[in-house]
Length: 139
Image (cartoon, rainbow, N blue to C red; front, side, top):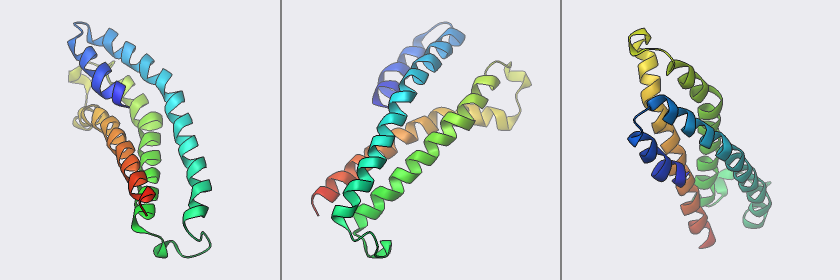
């Protein structure tokens, strides 16, 4: 996430050919996607195993410590936004970018503008999950 946001995006903004830069970025993001979903799977799998060590799973989640609930909310939000970005918004934006700007509706222009913001949101959510893990370790 950090590499794509801090290295790849500034590189493509300097490219004189936006279409080739977009193709390069999409290819790079697709290669990273497998790693990202693998890391999320490991995060969820290990989280489920560790959760039973920290709380009584059969008890109401409302009795669990706030950092644990916070981390669960962040992880679920991260998964939801990542799915939305990878399966809905990303493919739609790739198709829309092939159109000329005159052919785009206001809603399509808006979707193109928010697509990178959603990608950055996943970065912030991932950092939030990491921060919650630190709080949980201190319980």
